[in-house]
Amino acid sequence: MLLSELREEIRVSDQPLTHVSWTEQRLAGKTVWQWLSLLLIPLLLWYGTIWMIFLHMSRQSIITVHVHAQESVLEQYSQQIDTLLLEHHLRQSFPGMEVSDIAHARTLNVLKEVDAPHRRLVIAYLSDLHLIQGGYMDSRGMWQATGVTIGLWDADLSGVDLGGIDLSGAQLERADLDDANLTGANLRGADLADARLARANLSRIDLRDAQLIQADLTGATLTNGEVQGATLERAEMRGATLLQANLAEASLWHAHVLKGHLSRVFSLSGTTLSDGSRCHTLADLTNTTQQAENRDACLASFQEEARRAPRMLPRGEGRHVTAQGA
Image 1 (cartoon, rainbow, N blue to C red):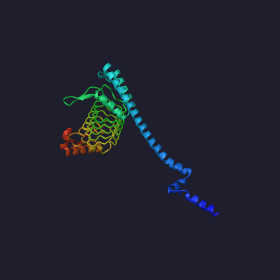
Image 2 (spheres, helix red, strand yellow):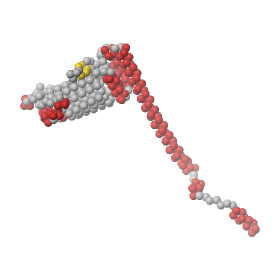
Image 3 (cartoon, helix red, strand yellow):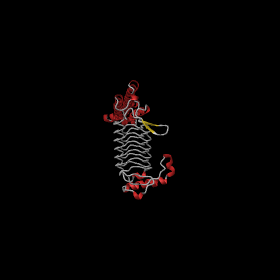
Image 4 (cartoon, helix red, strand yellow):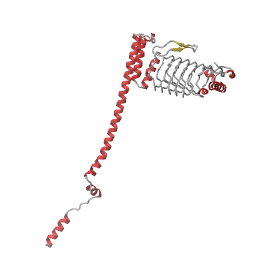
């Protein structure tokens, strides 16, 4: 008995001792769900990364396809205009003639098909070809009306950046220019009757002798705009910013202008105001029949011009203005 027990102890003592680490002890106690959670988290992170990469590539692919589609439309349009110029004498036509009306229809269609940046390219293209301008400045600096080749009436140019583009004499009746940027654009002599220019940026614009009858200029910015001789009769101008705008000789007959805004303009020399009266040069204020707010606007203009007289010379408005009845 003692001998057998001794042999058993010797046999057990001969077996190698195994060391179980703390990590092995922890892993040995994991359940199936715990193991799955350990594997699932990295898998989800990997899948999320792959999905984000896929979305980015898809978005870039969509943008690329969109740009190519827009450029294809513009290419087709330019080819159509080139054909009308070379084969159908478009440049010698004017609105009312078949070839001009075809060009107008195709222009309206392409403006509906492309986005705002590409609509700018359409207008710049036509301007560079001198197909939408209706006049030019001669060597004496005088405006010479010639008539347009392609009209832009009813065109959708809302939100388009047209800054600096030559649109002098353009026919833009009923055009939608809401929220458009026309900073520094040349629209001298342009016809904008019934056009929509709400919230448009017209800073430093040239609107001399332009027609804006019943145009909607609600909230538009005309800061430093050249608006001499423009017709703004029955125009909606409430909320428009007229700071330093030159309205000399312009007609504001029955225009809706917020009280006090006219006192901020650069000049009202010879301007016809909303009540039909005019701001005259060197007139006697005591003889005026104007409404009080219009009389005050003329007086404010006179005082402002007198204050800044040396700075007025570059803009050619070095005249003193007072108010007189029509």
